[in-house]
Image (tube, rainbow, N blue to C red; front, side):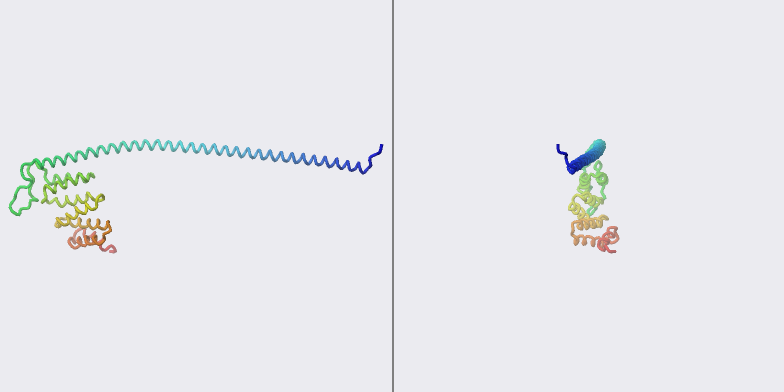
Length: 261
């Protein structure tokens, strides 16, 4: 039997050492890979746990917010129901007051229509009918005027206008007619500027001697100005200043004519 040569033995020994080293290196790499995978799994688990906790916290916040919204909505519904009940009650009161106002006007009209004597007793030629008293049983101009003013103060504009017109129709020469006509204009303000202007014009043109006349002219100027008709507004302001220089309306008109002063 031939003996294996020394070089061959050395080669085999070195090969064996190389294989053992590779195995250990592979084992180390496997262990390192396992450790890294374990760390990655742990980090992933921690991340999932944190994310899960955040989701739970967010869900709780959403639920709490929904509960708060539900409580506010319930409170709002209760408030709305209470407000609606109060509005309905006020509407019933307004309807009741309106019915009373209409009944009051109807009573005044009935008393006027049912009178047997003339509304204004005949006086001497040229006598002013404004100072003649109403016949017995008929509502006087002051009574009608007070009724109209009360309705205007309550916000019952239409009813107030009816009463003012009743006074004007039944007592055309009475001293309260310019005031009634002026208040008709006021009742239209903010609703129908043209109707307001018509009423104020009747005061300014038909009752120029009345203390209401300068204010009526000034109101006509304001309405024209609101419509953008500055020339017409200036004409009205100038009429106030020229025709009624000592009136309060004249001071306001001057401020309109000379805004820089």
